[in-house]
Amino acid sequence: MFQESSALLINKMDLMAYVDFDLEKARRDSLALNKDLNIFEVSCKTGAGLDAWVAWLDRQIDAFKK
Image 1 (cartoon, rainbow, N blue to C red):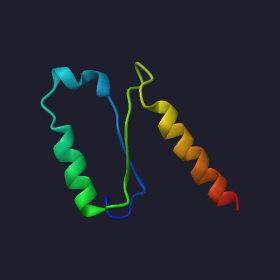
Image 2 (cartoon, helix red, strand yellow):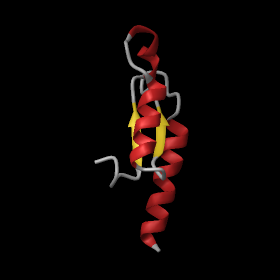
Image 3 (cartoon, rainbow, N blue to C red):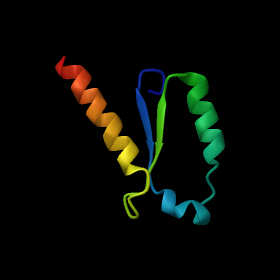
Image 4 (cartoon, one colour):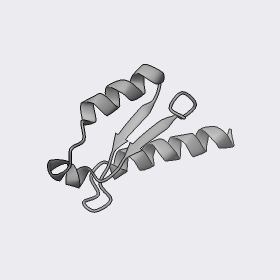
């Protein structure tokens, strides 16, 4: 999955202080499988990171239309 994907969306960033999740390990392991993977850390609750993800989606749509 990670080798074929263009993007990895890590949601619930607002909960990071409350869960046992090694974000840097997840990033490192994902990029080891796909060095071109775009990783977006987002929180739908706070809106953090959504602008970057939406901008990336817009670029993908524009490229597909060409």
